[in-house]
Image 1 (cartoon, one colour):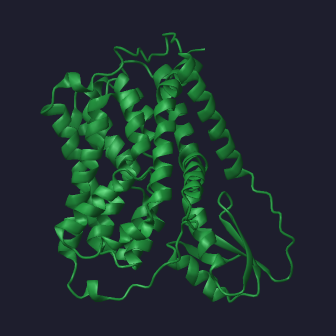
Image 2 (spheres, rainbow, N blue to C red):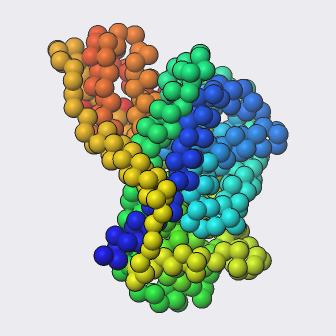
Length: 411
């Protein structure tokens, strides 16, 4: 079956790199604290903005998972300029997506993704900083509840925590979207005619605008966007257009824009979105008109077309089996969440809006658990519900969720 063959080929090409990326991401998470990040990001200077952008480039957080992190950093003293730079650079790339990009799209794309993320983040951060009034930065920021699990102090404990984060929590964050991206890419590869995008392929600027209109409101993780970009290039779209999708898709969506508007103001949110659009278009045009086309040639060596049969190595097949197992486990955890607590008349349910991944789920759980009187708390990501047991002040629970970057209301 052509569809299955194409799907398995992309999975086998990506899986060794993705697993390596998960491991590195877990080590970063366990051995480098979030407080360390926030400590270096106060002020609106170019230095703090560049620091924020550099910190965000290797972190494997999606555009929703980065929001609680950035909000906590902002409320712990990071400036709007630094927070915006972090918000722009982080979801565009990460160690996992860089490795996966190299595997499917080649070294040119893999190198340009973090470079573009850094440049657009610095540009956006400086632009946001220039719109701030001096008095804004003197406002006191209350610390938001830490959305991260307490880190163990021993080396062994940190190593175990890194494996859990990389191969359980992080897979849970991007697993669904990676699966969707692979399926969409395989469907495009097999069922879309080869000349379907021929018209747009001859008009890169028009195709980039169309890509932006699709990518900006869409939610897709940095890794999940890779097979989609590859399949569209094989159908005739230019490398620059594919790069626009790789940048704008992970970096922006309506949920991010809404939350940034509330936390940092509509002006900052508009500049944030504008910098992503301008940066994506600039890099896309540079790729199509200024860089050698052979840098971005894909498909010739790999023959990722539905009519071809691919041979799979034992190592890549083994890595794919591990990755599939992790994805299945993450999907089970995401959609099957049996309630184990015995609820009493002191149990209350809250409707939570803004959660899109386990990072968000954990941020809400930690925030509610810190409220006085809470005995137990369950957060159902799929249903968007938090079930709280204990004698609590409802306003305090709602305020705690708001402080973590989300919205809550009594069911």
